[in-house]
Length: 242
Image (cartoon, rainbow, N blue to C red; front, side, top):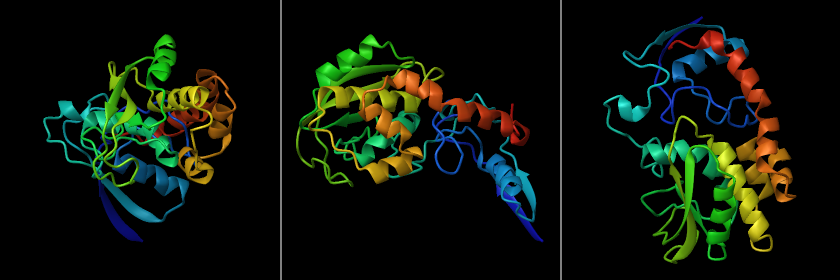
């Protein structure tokens, strides 16, 4: 039997397990577990015969955001420049599977989205009226410079900036779903979605299909979040931190 140790590095997007959509591997996009906690979970779930020990992180608590640890921010990905990008990523990443830029080629990737045809003011108005928790939307033009996804390189395009106003109340996937719903409402003939890529990101075609046919995003998310609550209860025994 293999003797294995895992260092329990915490998740850069925050501590608590939160309400975000569950993809194919039955783990929420924002799960709130450390690497060590996930190792314990997968050991049981996959029946892995290994003598596993987890080296805990000293001084960390589940409610502690990364910028409260005193540690410098190290990009978990080249296009993850800040904690705010990491917080919004679970929601705005779905636009990677569309013809909407996610702000690659700017200092605030995943905090701003845009396209030449985007009716940003109309979308902002629709979403502001919904009074979504934890975020503010503003219309803002931006220019992607040599973006790694090649979307609209060097072009000044209308965009929507998403600012986190209350990160404890933020539900990033709910934000992303509302954005896609509103963009489809205002520009149905311009929005393009790569169905297979989108469904891999979100775990099933259900969310894409519902949003594109105009289903209310909040009602949709309320329904889709149920497996997340079940995941939270099922994995409670693996959590090492309060």
